[in-house]
Image (cartoon, rainbow, N blue to C red):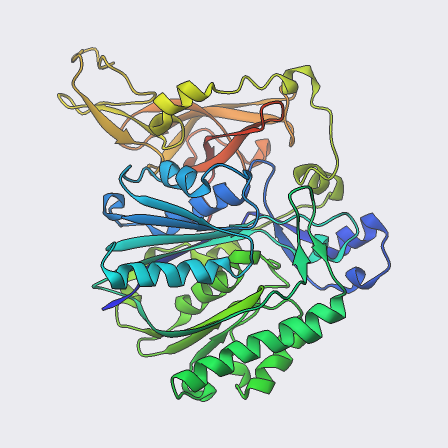
Amino acid sequence: MVGITSFGAYIPLLRINRKLISSATGWLGSASALPGEKAVANYDEDSLTMAVAAAVDCLRGIEREKIDELYFATTTSPYRERLGAGIVSTALDLRADIRAADFSNSIKAGTTALLAALDTVKAGSAKNVIVCASDCRVGKAGSNQEQSCGDGAAAFLVGEGKVIATIEGSYSLSYDFVDYWRTEADRFDRAWEDRWIRDIGYSRIIPEAISGLLKKYELNIKDFARVVYPSLYPREHAAMGKKLGAEPNQIQEQLFTTVGDTGTAYPLLMLAAALEEAKPGDRILVASYGNGSDALFLQVTAEIDKVRANKRGVKKHLASRKDLTNYEKYATFRDILTVDIGRRGEDVGATQLSTLWRERRMVLGGCGSRCKRCGTPHYPRQIVCANPSCGAVNEMEPYRFSDKKGQLFTYTGDSLAPSFSPPAIYGIVTFEGGGRYNFDLTDCDLESLKVGMPVEMTFRRKYRDTVRGIHGYFWKATPPRA
């Protein structure tokens, strides 16, 4: 039996009310009418870091050594030529002998990657494939996209054996329908007329894909406990369900007014939310949108109850939130406004690429070493054991710190250090099981910190070297979310 064996999600902590964006830009067009709020990636987050966070949620309790392939779907990779899936797999400390691939250039790339993973496992080329879909799309100030696009990620593990949902079938459409686009030279998404996108694209392509799936497998819309499709327009989302003949309680709740349009991750985030509530035997239909559509139907198994209990998932991420009440800060996070962070900020002290290669498992994977003789963990990795009663030499084994919990031993706030969200905060973290190191702290206020409080590790962007075009990543500490 082949299907989904685990799932995970990630929604950034920060939220911004769309009325705040509208009032700041002073634009009186249709964008001013968009309801609710959207999720905002922090200044040190991007599509890569969010993909890692979703994958960590997906892989809780799963041996990472068993992952054979990793697919990363995004339209907003920070690199045009560097394998994003390779960075994600290194950060997750997966084996080196895996196949990693990027899926891009369409916001339906997430479901396409999921279907590719299914075909790979069915063909016997791999036993376990993790699919990460993540987007951090940026709209021009005052544009409709600035308000509609939110940030988030989802991850699914496809394998065989104890699956939580079998993927029973699919139906795909591919159209060169131009609604949103971005060229190599574009900083922001471009879009054609909103009515064109809504009436000719969104409201026709998704129903066509769903109808094609139902016809292909001789099913009726009433056969499904949940029908999942992205909401680009809340009113049209509800109207589409009626056109399809589905009851209101069958339609999965949209995330547009709470998270926003998360691009490649959108249908998969909604699927994760559906699995959080699903019962064994439920059938779920999920459809994506973007230059066509992928429609899939799944059947939930009894294994679902064993897996979802330890997930942070969509529901807990939605509940864990913090208001971003300053549009200017939001604009600096998205690099819409350029701020001067001083001469010190310009001299980022970027890691040399040769050093990064040699120490990739330590820098990106968050791995140190552990003494085989006495069991003492070390970060950074050491050759000589730091335990005074041991002192063993060359008796170390790799030891992963990124998935360990810790306590804040001490901390400080620095108003002079360069930061996009001052003050810069850093502290010493003592890990459960041993080990101690100094890390930057993120997703927190100085006033909320206390010595001895629990923290966990999160993969974040450390710096952007604009001279060489290099994004530096490292692990930071953050207070645990619910």
